[in-house]
Length: 323
Ligand SMILES: NC(=O)c1ccc[n+]([C@@H]2O[C@H](COP(=O)([O-])OP(=O)(O)OC[C@H]3O[C@@H](n4cnc5c(N)ncnc54)[C@H](OP(=O)(O)O)[C@@H]3O)[C@@H](O)[C@H]2O)c1
Image (tube, rainbow, N blue to C red; front, top):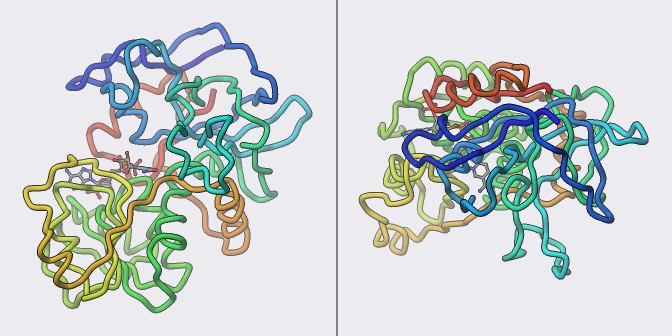
């Protein structure tokens, strides 16, 4: 099968660890289903893997990719839920399983012509959503959905600051939040991306670290070290920062502990979402007409171009590969 995979790990030069070529398809474990991939979406997770984060050398080569939409052997159109629980896990929320993994961490991922997943990880693709659109949902969009609607404790009319504007998670936060009646403010490294976020439905855009006209009810944080102090300072007393990523680094110059307890704030970790939340997200898209922002669609054979654009910070929205 054609696949984009990590052949090595280079912390400072992740693109050099990427290969695109033919690999022997792995066997399909009992209870798992083979899906013919029609589209797979790039996430920052794939870049972390090429840097060796969460992907030890003894698992290489590893097919990259968490997200896919495709078709089963029976002709069922599906979206793939990327969270794989340990067989012994019996809880209702897959993200609470300490032994969980994402596709491409222990099992081959989705940037390939076929992928194998447990049957329970399949969600029906609703009519009206294309394979390219659906491929954007399982990681970035599901993470955004859970951050806003499960983790943040906000309600329509509240103001939410999204750190970053152009990313896969950030564009999902803007669109989902605006359609749910939240006033969305964004920050960005570039004014152009801020303007594009406003065109999507954000109320206002600010430069990184800029003083806001008033304090917000919640902050959605995926940037990490570069924005952490701003996030804490931006919150009203009793507000909530939801964190699901740290693209610019996980060690901010200050943890802002005094402000966190004095204001007092809630800091909520959030990661991916459940299969039920993924199904609810697909329904929300059908009901609202909201669709993922796709920066570009590339043949899988040209996957390296998509990785390079993400590393250069050029993207606004998702990169999708078609095998
Ligand atoms: N925990 C989870 O389940 C989960 C799920 C999805 C993603 N994540 C994490 O969330 C992060 C974002 O993922 P993604 O796929 O959306 O990545 P992405 O598409 O590459 O987006 C990167 C985002 O970070 C901002 N950004 C990047 N570097 C920055 C810097 N130095 N200073 C300020 N802003 C910066 C960008 O905003 P501008 O370009 O507008 O400035 C953009 O919004 C990644 O770290 C990823 O690993 C975690």
